[in-house]
Length: 218
Image (cartoon, rainbow, N blue to C red; front, top):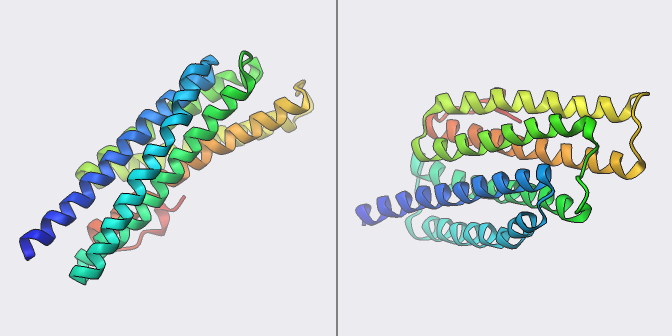
C-alpha cells in the first residue's frame, strides 16, 4: 500500500508539471498574438484553455481521492493539499493568458495598445513567458533557487505594470478611452499572471521546507 501511495504522489507531481507546461505554451502564444496582432494564434490559445481546466479538475479529483483513501499526514499531507492550491493558481494563470489572447482577438486587425506602449508590453510578455518556464522547472525539480528567480522577475513585471499606469494617467497620454481601458486590462493580466507564479513558488518552498515564507508572497 505504501508503494502505491508513493506512486500516487509522484503522479500528482507529474500532473502539476504537465499543466505548468501547457501554461508555458499558452502564455507564449498569447503574448505573441498580443504583440503581433495574430488572430489565429489568439483563437488557438482561447480554444486550448479548456485543456488546462480539464487537467486541473482531474488533478483535484485525484488529490481528493488520495486524501480520502490514504489519510496522509505530515509532509505527505502537505504535498496533497499544496497540489490542490497550486493547481488552482495554474488554472488562473491559464485564464490570464486566455484574457491576453482575447484582447488580441477583439482588436484585430489593429494592435491592442498604442505604439508608445508596445515596447513595455513586449518586455512584460517576455518576462511572463520566462516566469512560466521557470515555474515548470521549479515544479519539476523543487530547486528553491528558482523560486527566488521567479520573485525577482515578478518585481520587474510590477515595475512595468506601474509604468503603464503612469503613462496612461499622465498629461502627455494621447490615447483614446478604449486605448486606456485596453492598456490597463492588459497590464493587469500580465501582472496577475506573474503574481500567481509567485504564489505557487511560495507553496513549493513550503512543501520543500515546511516553513511558510511570507516574503515570497505576490
